[in-house]
Length: 394
Ligand code: PLP
Image (cartoon, rainbow, N blue to C red):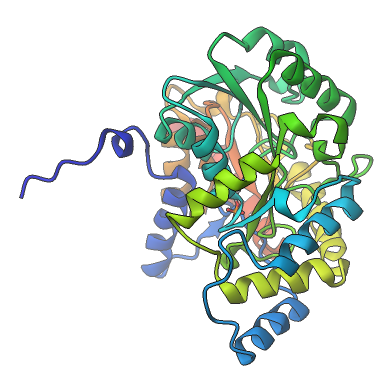
Protein backbone atom coordinates (compact mmCIF):
# COMPACT_ATOMS: atom_id res chain seq x y z
CA UNK A 1 0.00 0.00 0.00
CA UNK A 2 1.14 3.51 -0.80
CA UNK A 3 1.80 5.04 2.60
CA UNK A 4 0.98 8.71 2.73
CA UNK A 5 1.69 10.46 6.01
CA UNK A 6 0.03 13.69 7.05
CA UNK A 7 1.50 17.09 6.31
CA UNK A 8 1.70 17.76 10.03
CA UNK A 9 3.90 14.76 10.77
CA UNK A 10 6.08 15.55 7.77
CA UNK A 11 6.70 19.02 9.19
CA UNK A 12 8.75 17.67 12.09
CA UNK A 13 11.91 15.62 12.68
CA UNK A 14 12.55 12.86 15.20
CA UNK A 15 14.21 14.31 18.30
CA UNK A 16 17.95 14.63 17.47
CA UNK A 17 18.99 14.09 21.08
CA UNK A 18 17.15 10.79 21.12
CA UNK A 19 18.83 9.96 17.80
CA UNK A 20 22.25 10.47 19.43
CA UNK A 21 21.19 8.19 22.27
CA UNK A 22 20.13 5.53 19.75
CA UNK A 23 23.45 5.78 17.88
CA UNK A 24 25.44 5.48 21.12
CA UNK A 25 23.30 2.48 22.01
CA UNK A 26 24.18 0.80 18.69
CA UNK A 27 27.88 1.19 19.53
CA UNK A 28 27.32 -0.20 23.03
CA UNK A 29 25.40 -3.16 21.61
CA UNK A 30 28.55 -3.99 19.59
CA UNK A 31 30.50 -4.04 22.85
CA UNK A 32 32.08 -0.59 22.43
CA UNK A 33 32.76 1.26 25.67
CA UNK A 34 31.09 4.61 24.89
CA UNK A 35 31.57 7.63 27.15
CA UNK A 36 28.13 9.07 26.84
CA UNK A 37 27.81 12.83 27.27
CA UNK A 38 24.52 12.75 25.36
CA UNK A 39 21.77 12.08 27.86
CA UNK A 40 19.61 14.81 29.25
CA UNK A 41 18.76 12.85 32.33
CA UNK A 42 20.11 12.42 35.84
CA UNK A 43 22.31 9.36 36.29
CA UNK A 44 21.00 9.04 39.86
CA UNK A 45 18.37 6.46 40.74
CA UNK A 46 14.91 7.59 41.80
CA UNK A 47 15.04 8.09 45.60
CA UNK A 48 13.78 5.17 47.70
CA UNK A 49 10.85 6.97 49.33
CA UNK A 50 9.48 7.80 45.88
CA UNK A 51 9.77 4.20 44.72
CA UNK A 52 8.11 3.09 47.97
CA UNK A 53 5.16 5.38 47.27
CA UNK A 54 4.70 3.70 43.90
CA UNK A 55 4.99 0.22 45.40
CA UNK A 56 2.39 1.08 48.00
CA UNK A 57 0.07 2.40 45.29
CA UNK A 58 0.45 -0.88 43.43
CA UNK A 59 -0.28 -2.87 46.60
CA UNK A 60 -3.37 -0.76 47.22
CA UNK A 61 -4.51 -1.45 43.65
CA UNK A 62 -4.35 2.16 42.52
CA UNK A 63 -4.06 0.78 39.05
CA UNK A 64 -7.24 2.12 37.47
CA UNK A 65 -8.02 5.17 35.38
CA UNK A 66 -7.75 8.37 37.36
CA UNK A 67 -9.23 11.81 36.70
CA UNK A 68 -7.85 13.02 33.36
CA UNK A 69 -6.09 16.04 34.92
CA UNK A 70 -4.56 13.90 37.68
CA UNK A 71 -5.57 12.70 41.13
CA UNK A 72 -6.84 15.46 43.43
CA UNK A 73 -4.12 15.04 46.11
CA UNK A 74 -1.39 15.35 43.49
CA UNK A 75 -2.83 18.54 41.96
CA UNK A 76 -3.05 19.90 45.49
CA UNK A 77 0.52 18.80 46.26
CA UNK A 78 1.86 20.41 43.06
CA UNK A 79 0.34 23.81 43.80
CA UNK A 80 1.46 23.65 47.45
CA UNK A 81 4.99 22.54 46.51
CA UNK A 82 5.24 25.24 43.87
CA UNK A 83 4.02 27.84 46.38
CA UNK A 84 6.54 26.67 49.00
CA UNK A 85 9.45 26.55 46.53
CA UNK A 86 8.78 29.72 44.58
CA UNK A 87 6.07 31.78 46.27
CA UNK A 88 3.43 31.24 43.58
CA UNK A 89 -0.30 31.18 44.23
CA UNK A 90 -2.18 28.56 42.22
CA UNK A 91 -5.32 26.55 42.95
CA UNK A 92 -5.72 22.89 41.94
CA UNK A 93 -8.16 23.73 39.09
CA UNK A 94 -5.28 25.72 37.53
CA UNK A 95 -3.06 22.63 37.54
CA UNK A 96 -3.03 19.71 35.11
CA UNK A 97 -0.81 16.67 35.63
CA UNK A 98 0.75 15.56 32.35
CA UNK A 99 2.86 12.74 30.94
CA UNK A 100 6.12 14.62 31.58
CA UNK A 101 6.92 18.26 30.97
CA UNK A 102 7.14 17.66 27.22
CA UNK A 103 3.49 16.66 27.19
CA UNK A 104 2.55 19.82 29.12
CA UNK A 105 4.32 21.95 26.49
CA UNK A 106 2.73 19.99 23.65
CA UNK A 107 -0.73 20.39 25.15
CA UNK A 108 -0.31 24.08 26.02
CA UNK A 109 0.86 24.86 22.48
CA UNK A 110 -1.89 22.60 21.12
CA UNK A 111 -4.64 24.57 22.84
CA UNK A 112 -3.24 28.08 22.28
CA UNK A 113 -1.53 28.13 18.89
CA UNK A 114 -3.53 28.21 15.69
CA UNK A 115 -2.38 27.81 12.14
CA UNK A 116 -0.02 30.66 11.21
CA UNK A 117 0.41 31.95 14.78
CA UNK A 118 3.97 32.85 15.64
CA UNK A 119 5.82 31.60 18.69
CA UNK A 120 9.06 33.27 19.80
CA UNK A 121 11.78 30.79 20.70
CA UNK A 122 15.18 31.97 21.93
CA UNK A 123 18.11 30.03 20.43
CA UNK A 124 19.93 27.93 21.43
CA UNK A 125 16.67 26.15 22.17
CA UNK A 126 15.59 22.79 23.48
CA UNK A 127 15.12 20.57 20.42
CA UNK A 128 11.39 19.99 20.86
CA UNK A 129 10.14 23.58 21.04
CA UNK A 130 10.18 24.40 17.31
CA UNK A 131 8.84 21.01 16.27
CA UNK A 132 5.96 21.09 18.76
CA UNK A 133 5.02 24.54 17.42
CA UNK A 134 5.26 23.33 13.82
CA UNK A 135 3.20 20.23 14.51
CA UNK A 136 0.47 22.45 15.92
CA UNK A 137 0.50 24.59 12.76
CA UNK A 138 2.37 27.53 14.29
CA UNK A 139 5.49 29.26 13.05
CA UNK A 140 8.61 29.28 15.26
CA UNK A 141 10.34 32.66 15.20
CA UNK A 142 13.85 32.36 16.53
CA UNK A 143 15.49 35.01 18.73
CA UNK A 144 19.26 34.56 18.72
CA UNK A 145 21.14 34.87 22.00
CA UNK A 146 24.91 35.16 21.97
CA UNK A 147 27.69 33.26 23.72
CA UNK A 148 29.52 36.53 24.40
CA UNK A 149 26.44 37.60 26.35
CA UNK A 150 26.22 34.32 28.30
CA UNK A 151 23.31 33.29 26.02
CA UNK A 152 21.13 35.74 27.96
CA UNK A 153 17.69 36.59 26.62
CA UNK A 154 16.86 40.29 26.98
CA UNK A 155 13.42 41.87 27.20
CA UNK A 156 14.41 44.34 24.46
CA UNK A 157 15.03 41.45 22.03
CA UNK A 158 11.60 40.01 22.81
CA UNK A 159 9.97 43.38 22.26
CA UNK A 160 11.64 43.72 18.86
CA UNK A 161 10.66 40.23 17.73
CA UNK A 162 6.94 40.61 18.46
CA UNK A 163 4.78 41.03 15.36
CA UNK A 164 1.06 41.05 14.63
CA UNK A 165 0.87 37.22 14.57
CA UNK A 166 2.94 36.60 17.73
CA UNK A 167 0.98 34.65 20.34
CA UNK A 168 3.59 33.20 22.66
CA UNK A 169 7.16 33.34 23.92
CA UNK A 170 8.79 30.19 25.28
CA UNK A 171 11.48 30.74 27.90
CA UNK A 172 13.49 27.87 29.27
CA UNK A 173 15.55 28.83 32.31
CA UNK A 174 17.83 27.16 33.31
CA UNK A 175 18.32 26.48 29.66
CA UNK A 176 18.91 23.26 27.80
CA UNK A 177 21.45 23.25 26.11
CA UNK A 178 23.37 26.31 27.37
CA UNK A 179 22.67 26.16 31.11
CA UNK A 180 21.96 29.92 31.00
CA UNK A 181 19.71 31.26 33.75
CA UNK A 182 17.53 34.33 33.17
CA UNK A 183 18.03 36.62 36.19
CA UNK A 184 14.73 37.37 38.01
CA UNK A 185 14.87 41.10 37.19
CA UNK A 186 15.24 40.42 33.46
CA UNK A 187 12.52 37.76 33.64
CA UNK A 188 10.20 40.37 35.17
CA UNK A 189 11.00 42.74 32.30
CA UNK A 190 10.34 39.98 29.75
CA UNK A 191 7.01 39.24 31.43
CA UNK A 192 6.12 42.92 31.35
CA UNK A 193 6.74 43.01 27.59
CA UNK A 194 4.57 39.92 27.11
CA UNK A 195 1.82 41.42 29.20
CA UNK A 196 1.89 44.77 27.47
CA UNK A 197 1.88 43.16 24.02
CA UNK A 198 -0.76 40.59 24.94
CA UNK A 199 1.22 37.39 24.35
CA UNK A 200 1.63 34.25 26.43
CA UNK A 201 4.81 33.59 28.36
CA UNK A 202 5.35 29.85 28.55
CA UNK A 203 8.03 29.19 31.15
CA UNK A 204 9.66 25.77 30.99
CA UNK A 205 11.05 25.18 34.48
CA UNK A 206 12.17 21.59 34.09
CA UNK A 207 15.64 22.42 35.49
CA UNK A 208 14.42 24.86 38.15
CA UNK A 209 16.29 23.22 41.01
CA UNK A 210 19.61 22.80 39.25
CA UNK A 211 21.10 26.26 39.68
CA UNK A 212 24.50 27.07 41.13
CA UNK A 213 25.47 29.78 43.58
CA UNK A 214 24.77 32.66 43.47
CA UNK A 215 21.70 31.85 41.32
CA UNK A 216 18.64 30.60 43.24
CA UNK A 217 15.65 28.52 42.11
CA UNK A 218 13.12 30.91 40.61
CA UNK A 219 9.74 30.71 38.91
CA UNK A 220 8.13 33.52 36.98
CA UNK A 221 4.91 31.92 38.27
CA UNK A 222 5.66 33.84 41.46
CA UNK A 223 4.59 37.03 39.63
CA UNK A 224 1.05 36.47 40.85
CA UNK A 225 -0.29 39.77 39.47
CA UNK A 226 0.53 38.62 35.92
CA UNK A 227 -0.68 35.01 36.20
CA UNK A 228 -3.17 35.64 33.41
CA UNK A 229 -0.31 35.74 30.88
CA UNK A 230 1.80 32.90 32.21
CA UNK A 231 1.90 29.18 31.65
CA UNK A 232 4.32 27.35 33.91
CA UNK A 233 5.56 23.96 32.77
CA UNK A 234 7.22 21.81 35.40
CA UNK A 235 8.52 18.28 35.51
CA UNK A 236 9.52 15.74 38.11
CA UNK A 237 11.89 14.11 35.61
CA UNK A 238 15.09 15.97 36.45
CA UNK A 239 14.35 17.36 39.91
CA UNK A 240 13.58 13.97 41.41
CA UNK A 241 15.50 11.73 38.98
CA UNK A 242 12.21 10.38 37.61
CA UNK A 243 12.63 10.61 33.83
CA UNK A 244 11.07 7.23 33.13
CA UNK A 245 8.02 7.78 35.29
CA UNK A 246 6.70 10.48 32.99
CA UNK A 247 5.14 13.03 35.30
CA UNK A 248 5.00 16.75 34.65
CA UNK A 249 2.46 19.51 35.04
CA UNK A 250 1.11 22.74 33.66
CA UNK A 251 0.01 25.67 35.81
CA UNK A 252 -2.19 28.00 33.82
CA UNK A 253 -5.30 30.17 33.97
CA UNK A 254 -8.29 27.87 34.50
CA UNK A 255 -9.74 28.12 30.96
CA UNK A 256 -6.34 27.03 29.58
CA UNK A 257 -5.98 24.26 32.18
CA UNK A 258 -9.49 23.07 31.28
CA UNK A 259 -8.61 23.06 27.57
CA UNK A 260 -5.43 21.07 28.27
CA UNK A 261 -7.46 18.55 30.27
CA UNK A 262 -9.96 18.35 27.39
CA UNK A 263 -7.12 17.59 24.96
CA UNK A 264 -5.80 14.93 27.34
CA UNK A 265 -9.30 13.46 27.64
CA UNK A 266 -9.20 12.72 23.91
CA UNK A 267 -5.57 11.62 23.72
CA UNK A 268 -3.53 10.20 26.60
CA UNK A 269 -6.18 10.32 29.37
CA UNK A 270 -4.53 10.42 32.80
CA UNK A 271 -0.80 10.00 33.38
CA UNK A 272 -0.04 6.51 34.75
CA UNK A 273 -1.80 6.05 38.09
CA UNK A 274 1.12 4.58 40.05
CA UNK A 275 3.51 7.23 38.67
CA UNK A 276 1.13 9.87 40.01
CA UNK A 277 1.36 8.33 43.49
CA UNK A 278 5.14 8.25 43.18
CA UNK A 279 5.02 11.96 42.28
CA UNK A 280 2.89 12.60 45.33
CA UNK A 281 5.55 10.87 47.44
CA UNK A 282 8.22 13.06 45.83
CA UNK A 283 6.46 16.36 46.40
CA UNK A 284 5.29 15.56 49.92
CA UNK A 285 8.63 13.99 50.93
CA UNK A 286 12.13 15.21 51.72
CA UNK A 287 14.07 17.31 49.20
CA UNK A 288 17.42 16.06 50.53
CA UNK A 289 18.09 14.01 47.40
CA UNK A 290 17.76 17.15 45.28
CA UNK A 291 20.43 18.93 47.37
CA UNK A 292 22.69 15.88 47.14
CA UNK A 293 22.37 15.75 43.36
CA UNK A 294 22.99 19.47 43.05
CA UNK A 295 26.18 19.25 45.11
CA UNK A 296 27.42 16.42 42.92
CA UNK A 297 26.52 18.27 39.71
CA UNK A 298 28.42 21.30 41.00
CA UNK A 299 31.52 19.16 41.53
CA UNK A 300 31.24 17.65 38.05
CA UNK A 301 30.56 21.02 36.44
CA UNK A 302 33.80 22.42 37.86
CA UNK A 303 35.78 19.43 36.64
CA UNK A 304 34.36 19.25 33.14
CA UNK A 305 34.64 22.99 32.51
CA UNK A 306 38.23 22.93 33.74
CA UNK A 307 39.04 20.06 31.38
CA UNK A 308 37.16 21.32 28.31
CA UNK A 309 38.62 24.85 28.63
CA UNK A 310 42.08 23.31 28.28
CA UNK A 311 41.27 21.76 24.88
CA UNK A 312 43.03 23.75 22.18
CA UNK A 313 40.67 25.96 20.18
CA UNK A 314 37.61 25.09 22.27
CA UNK A 315 35.90 27.94 24.14
CA UNK A 316 33.65 27.36 27.10
CA UNK A 317 31.91 29.57 29.64
CA UNK A 318 30.53 28.51 33.02
CA UNK A 319 26.74 28.24 32.94
CA UNK A 320 24.65 28.99 36.03
CA UNK A 321 22.27 26.07 35.76
CA UNK A 322 21.12 22.68 34.40
CA UNK A 323 23.69 19.92 33.83
CA UNK A 324 25.09 20.84 30.43
CA UNK A 325 27.98 22.79 29.06
CA UNK A 326 27.84 24.18 25.54
CA UNK A 327 31.37 24.75 24.28
CA UNK A 328 32.19 26.65 21.12
CA UNK A 329 34.00 24.26 18.79
CA UNK A 330 33.70 26.41 15.66
CA UNK A 331 37.47 26.89 15.50
CA UNK A 332 37.90 23.11 15.34
CA UNK A 333 35.43 22.27 12.58
CA UNK A 334 38.01 22.57 9.81
CA UNK A 335 35.36 23.04 7.14
CA UNK A 336 33.06 20.32 8.49
CA UNK A 337 30.00 20.91 10.63
CA UNK A 338 29.00 19.99 14.17
CA UNK A 339 27.15 16.90 13.02
CA UNK A 340 30.31 15.62 11.32
CA UNK A 341 32.32 16.45 14.43
CA UNK A 342 29.90 14.56 16.69
CA UNK A 343 30.04 11.58 14.32
CA UNK A 344 33.84 11.64 14.36
CA UNK A 345 33.92 11.87 18.14
CA UNK A 346 31.73 8.79 18.36
CA UNK A 347 33.53 6.82 15.66
CA UNK A 348 37.10 7.62 16.59
CA UNK A 349 37.01 8.27 20.33
CA UNK A 350 33.73 6.64 21.34
CA UNK A 351 32.43 9.83 22.92
CA UNK A 352 28.77 10.73 22.44
CA UNK A 353 27.83 14.43 22.37
CA UNK A 354 24.94 16.30 20.72
CA UNK A 355 25.86 18.70 17.88
CA UNK A 356 24.77 22.33 18.29
CA UNK A 357 22.76 22.10 15.07
CA UNK A 358 20.10 20.21 17.05
CA UNK A 359 19.59 23.31 19.18
CA UNK A 360 19.75 25.88 16.38
CA UNK A 361 23.39 26.69 17.22
CA UNK A 362 25.93 25.36 14.73
CA UNK A 363 29.53 25.58 15.92
CA UNK A 364 28.76 24.24 19.40
CA UNK A 365 28.37 20.86 21.01
CA UNK A 366 26.32 19.96 24.06
CA UNK A 367 28.06 17.96 26.74
CA UNK A 368 25.89 16.60 29.54
CA UNK A 369 27.65 16.08 32.86
CA UNK A 370 24.80 14.01 34.24
CA UNK A 371 27.25 11.16 34.25
CA UNK A 372 29.74 9.80 36.79
CA UNK A 373 33.03 11.49 37.64
CA UNK A 374 34.86 8.41 36.30
CA UNK A 375 33.15 8.85 32.94
CA UNK A 376 33.97 12.54 32.97
CA UNK A 377 37.66 11.81 33.62
CA UNK A 378 37.76 9.19 30.88
CA UNK A 379 35.84 11.46 28.50
CA UNK A 380 38.24 14.33 29.10
CA UNK A 381 41.17 12.03 28.40
CA UNK A 382 39.57 11.00 25.09
CA UNK A 383 38.63 14.58 24.16
CA UNK A 384 42.23 15.63 24.71
CA UNK A 385 43.49 12.86 22.47
CA UNK A 386 40.85 13.55 19.82
CA UNK A 387 41.42 17.29 19.67
CA UNK A 388 45.17 16.80 19.52
CA UNK A 389 44.68 15.13 16.14
CA UNK A 390 41.28 16.39 15.04
CA UNK A 391 42.32 19.03 12.52
CA UNK A 392 43.72 16.30 10.32
CA UNK A 393 40.76 13.97 10.92
CA UNK A 394 37.89 16.31 9.93
N1 PLP B 1 12.04 20.87 28.73
C1 PLP B 1 13.37 20.79 28.61
C2 PLP B 1 14.15 22.04 28.43
C3 PLP B 1 14.01 19.54 28.64
O1 PLP B 1 15.33 19.47 28.51
C4 PLP B 1 13.22 18.38 28.78
C5 PLP B 1 13.85 17.05 28.75
O2 PLP B 1 14.96 16.85 28.37
C6 PLP B 1 11.85 18.54 28.93
C7 PLP B 1 11.29 19.78 28.89
C8 PLP B 1 10.93 17.37 29.06
O3 PLP B 1 11.16 16.57 30.12
P1 PLP B 1 10.08 15.52 30.59
O4 PLP B 1 9.09 15.34 29.50
O5 PLP B 1 10.83 14.30 30.91
O6 PLP B 1 9.44 16.14 31.79
